[in-house]
Image 1 (tube, one colour):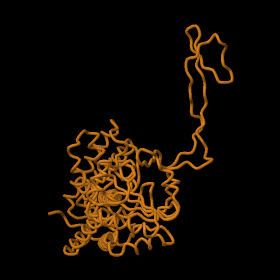
Image 2: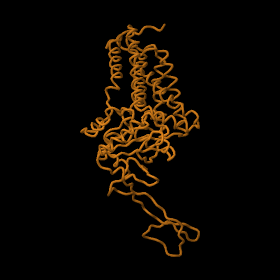
Image 3: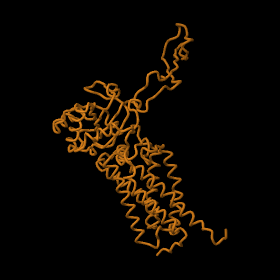
Length: 421
């Protein structure tokens, strides 16, 4: 290749850094935006670890702000616009995240950083190393920011129109995942999973195997013996030692326990055959009372259609009594750990449709159709396969923005970058 056609190092490193960081921030923002409530819970974990409980009421605002910041920086980098602002903002954001991950790597206040939501959990040390590595493209981006080729650089109207499209796409995607349930479920209780298989140990499954030794003492000295070679009665028994030599079967979810009046009824509920409806709420106190008429209708229809109905929450008996009194609910309620309920489904309340033990569908209770509820129930239970959240309606704007931006970049990638003013 002739020398005059070669791209200089500063140009190549700037463009490569731009797309590496855009990919990181868009991906990180996307997996958080899929599940905004999951980000709220992670922020609350941080606030608890730092003893900042007074800020917890603002965790939802912090969740939206974090997701929007990552997405917006990713959009600006991907489009290559507002180069000075974007470079500074990326440097400050990545620098702050690197310092935060250094702290959690040293002191381990939370189990994982939550940087990729529930999609990918990595150790705190790995997270810090990852951020250190990504500071390399941050340096090149900041150093050679004016070497970036903006998309649609000679067509400002088109450029800002595409930027608005990107902002609208991000906003709509976040809103949709709050208004309904997350588009993708990265947790164990996915649609299509067998609920009983998730939480139970099947009959005949391998059990934990242990090796036992016994410690005895004589003349002030302790010795350990196997069970087959115990010492004579001149030795004094001290203790029994237990060592796990073979790990047995462990369910995907451990500690799952449903109670009714203090009595465990987990097996009774999970082994229920046929069609079953669960209405779950981490707390009836914080559940939306405006949805009570739909839940009451759902309960009435379940009795009419011969469908088992279970209302499960993490509430105290007092909160349950208040909910029943204020909403005139006739269904009885069961107790399950509130954190487990939040893991099963994010809405409060959520509705699960379970068919022969398989999670057939999960919806936000807001998505119950008051005028067509019986038809909605029938369609869900008669569907040939489990029903997931539709992908295209929530992502079509994001897809349109990505394609438009890529086309603009490809068209202009050979254009000379104008000098900064």
